[in-house]
Image (cartoon, rainbow, N blue to C red; front, side, top):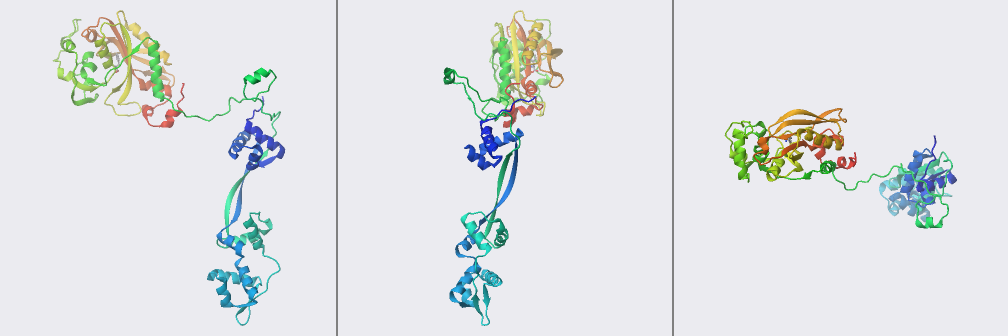
Length: 490
Ligand code: PHE
């Protein structure tokens, strides 16, 4: 099947000239079309890709006069100058001639040698020099004259040019590239007229039939790199959008805070491994106050003896000092516990997107500083089943419709689930965070009577999937071209 070729305005101009001339140089095409040589080169590139042109580049050597050459063109070749000196006087003594010539020794000797070989000068018995002028000029002299006036050198004088080129400073050779473009195939049904490019009110008013120039909507266009948001920022916006459209409101909390909100309020015993320095980063020397004296006693009592639910608590002596250690939050559940303590009666759906910190070694699959997204639902009649529904809906709206859950354990939720999404990109399931129904030991001391559901996950792992990358570090490298080249829409 053959579709008619379409041509750009520039291509038409170049074609028009080549249909007349058959072949031409870039300069000729530029002159004939009134376009710059650069524009002509672009059009030639396109036409060549369409198989219409043959482009040949020839390197030409161009000879110009050097400093000595220009002098010889002005004053004559040294051998001619010697001859003129002698002829003017009829006869000159050798040293006299040498003195009048005023040439460096080497040049004088060479010039005299050449003049004798040409038969222009001869040395008589008494050491005098006599001359016999030739009838015409030397081919070298013709070449000098031509070069001095910018005229082309007669190809027959090539040998004379070579001879001059051997004299120091006479000839400078430069290279120039000549491109010659030949039309090898005439495009069929080519209409060289341009047609109208735009529908204007005038055209419509005229009401006459018009022909439009063809637009090639598949023609390669230049890649623009205007300012844009970072791909990770875009992904976060997508997550935010998904949660907001499910009826969630965004909340925030501090990054550094007392361990109380990160651990104690979440019924995480003070000897829990997650609280150890190998896993968690503390700010040394600064104690953070809990600020909610009313809650401290209740949380202490719950840790030690349990919360009137039949659970017996963790059975140890709870330390306020430990609860006041300043910690870089290890999960955004710290934001959830604070939010719940401040809004015990409210039925709410909130989420938080925030940095969390863990004492990890940085590699392709671990960051020590990453972003967690956590959603909390506080409703009178909330159920675990509803939580699974929310999560399924959420991950589907991010483009992961296959979601499954495994039972797991957190000190603060029961039951607890570990959601996994099926990553088509990897051909396998990927665990994404944790979730569960907050235990009475968490919500009752805060004065909450609702059922509270929550799920939290690391943002970067999913961003990686969405962006088709493998290494978490690529998300935060300073590689600008990476950030620029990620498609805006997946
Ligand atoms: N905080 C858990 C984590 O960081 C995730 C989680 C959030 C679990 C909410 C249960 C409820 O892995």
